[in-house]
Image (cartoon, rainbow, N blue to C red; front, top):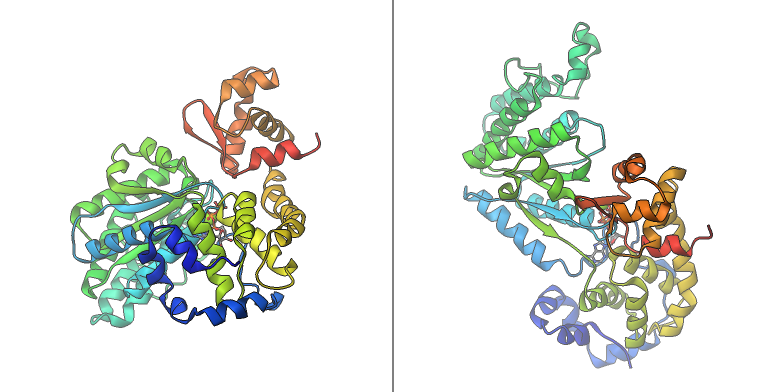
Length: 438
Ligand SMILES: Nc1ncnc2c1ncn2[C@@H]1O[C@H](COP(=O)(O)OP(=O)(O)OP(=O)(O)O)[C@@H](O)[C@H]1O
Ligand SMILES: [Mg+2]
C-alpha cells in the first residue's frame, strides 16, 4: 500500500486546490506508475528536500490562502484602489522568508519593480531602503519613456541615501561620503532633510510616481521587520500611511516574529489599519503530506501512509523540520515506497542535525545569564510563561532579570507579544533545552 498525492488531496477534502496545483503531475499518475514508484530506488543525488534558512522548498505547501490574499493586494494596488499591505508573522522556521520571496516573485511576474531588505537591530534602514528602491526603479527604468524623469528620481534617491545622521557628521568631507552606486549627481532639496519620516515620505511619493508612469507598481520587502530600530519603524509607518492616502502604487510588505504587530502598534497606533497581518504556522497534516509527497513523486518515489504518520509525528508540521527529516530519510531509504522503518532509522541523524544547525546555533548566541533564563522558561513548559514565574523559578527578583530577557528578545530567541509574558521564537526549543545535560 502506498500513499499518493491523489489520496492526500481527496482526504483533505479540497481536491480542487491540490488538483489545480498538481494537475500536470496528476495527468500522468496511472496505476502502472504506482507499480513503478513502488520499485524505484531512492537516489541521493535527486534528493529534492531543502532544509535551510530561506531555502526555497520543492513544494510550497499550505500557503494558498496567503498567496491568494497577496494576489488581491497586488491587483487592488495596481488599480489604484485603497489597500492595506501585508505583514507575515510566525515562529522561526515556519516559512516567512520563503513566503516573502514568493510574494516578490508574484510582483516581478506582474512586471513590478521590487527590492528587499533584511532589517538588523541598531541599523538604520535609510541605506538599505535606498539600495532596495534603487534596484526596484532600475527594473522599471527600461520601460519608462522619459529617461530624464528616472535620472531626476535617482538624484533624489542618492541625496536621500547620503542624508543620514552619520553622513551629516562627515558632511565636511564630501569626498568621504558614502556612495550608493548611483551614477547621477545627487539632487538637493528633496528627501534629504535628515529627518527619516519626512525623507521617506517624499522618496516614496516620487518612486510611486515613476511606477505610475510605467503603469506598474513597486513593492519593497522587509524581512526580520521586528529588528528595525524604533524611530525608523515609526518613520516607515508614517511614510506608508501618507502613501496609502495618496493611493500611490508602492507597498511595503513585511515579515517577522509573532510580536511584530505589537512592535508596529507601539510605534504608530494606526498601524493596524495600515497592514493586514497574516500569521503563518505549522502545516496541517494534509499540507505536510503534500510538502513531502509532491517533490518525491516528481522523482518517482513515494511514502507509505505509516511513514507519513511517523514523519508528521516527528516534524510536527513545522516546515523546517519537515524538510530536515525528509532530507535525511531520503538518503537513508533504500527504495520506494519509503517506510516507517526508514523514518526510525533516519530519526537520530535528523535530530542530531537539527540539534546542531537549528537549535544549537541559536543557543550558542546566548550569554550564560540568558541561557539560565531560557532553561528556566523551558522548565516551566512549552506555553508562553509569565516573566514573574521565570523569576520565581530562578529564585531572583524580576527586575534583576530584565537584561537577560531584553538580550534574548534582541537576539530573536524569545518574544513578548503580551506585557509580562515571554515565549520561545523557536518551535520545540523548550523540548530541546530540557533534553540537554545541565
Ligand atoms: N510552505 C512550505 N512548505 C514546505 N516547506 C517549507 C514551506 N515554507 C518553508 N519551508 C521550508 O522551511 C524552512 C524554513 O523556511 P524559512 O527560512 O522561510 O522560515 P522563516 O520563517 O523565515 O524562519 P526564520 O524565522 O528563522 O527566518 C526552509 O527549509 C523551507 O524550505
Ligand atoms: Mg526568515
